[in-house]
Length: 433
Image 1: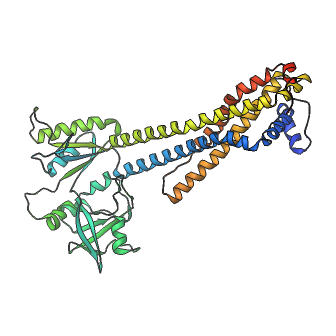
Image 2: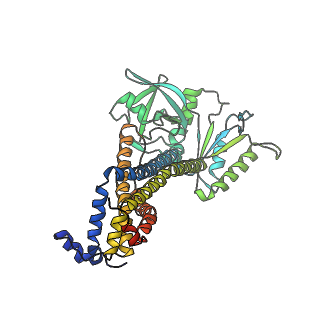
Image 3: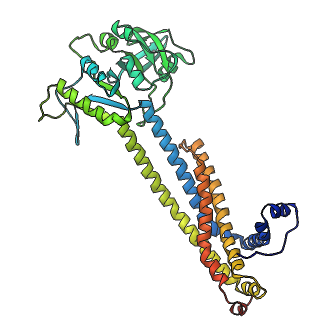
């Protein structure tokens, strides 16, 4: 493109720009003139930018909400443990849970699973059962689970104080317990209860440790409202002393890596079928749940939902670009006489096109920056007041700038081309406004 103009604007800023960017400094008067022209039609310019503002704010907000939701899902899955399988008795069918002869597993099943080459850890557990826990005059009814030390490793539980019970505690039938953060807070407040004695169902237990809080699960359940006991202790003192009753109601398995997850499922399935003496024609009397697959499904669902919201938000960008194009076409029509004068005194097509294209880019750029600020403000307000998970990223800023440039150029290209290709003699015949 030809040099924009030889005019200059006095002042230190212009001198600095002229030294750093000689070509840009020559175009500075055109930038000023485009800004002045838009300032003369403030309401019209604002209405043209409104679609861009709403569109960019929506896209930024949807990206932030999508990122925040994905982080919440990942944290919830990580709280359950990584590369984890959960094996429950019974077979899940399309109409619900089908009953079978298998109501629980045995410790032999757990040991056999732990010895598989693709398995790192395996732990038995009971389903949570509510028992009254008390300390002094304080009482709290809490879900209690009987298990082994490997369970806490598989479920990725960490400790704020103390430690978990040991294999020796399981073999010795010791009355020790590990408390979740909610139970510890309800019974002991801010005090560290490690080493103290409290009661479960009126039986004394020593507190081995307190777990770090995990918060709510994806189904809204408080994961910290829990007490863990050695599985032998639970059977003896809480669930009943009938030696024919097994407490292994569910088995938690930690697989060596995600890459061998399918192989591990096959190995576990085949081994359990062999231990239960199931014929080839018989269906499994147990169900293997893959939590890694659940995580992937949740992530895919969240991604699809985010893309849908972004597609809806992009409609505002399209409407905004059409609005800018309409405003620029009206501007070109109103300034036809001005265009004719400029061409008559020597302005080139490139200079005319650059001026009107620049006005469209300025409209789009200001709208995008305003939309970016609006998106951040609404996101922060939603996070602080409505507890909506949001997570902003540099992608939002870059995307808004790319949108500003792209929409401005695309929407202003045709009006600028139309202005640049007017014949001076025809344009001068239109009375000036």
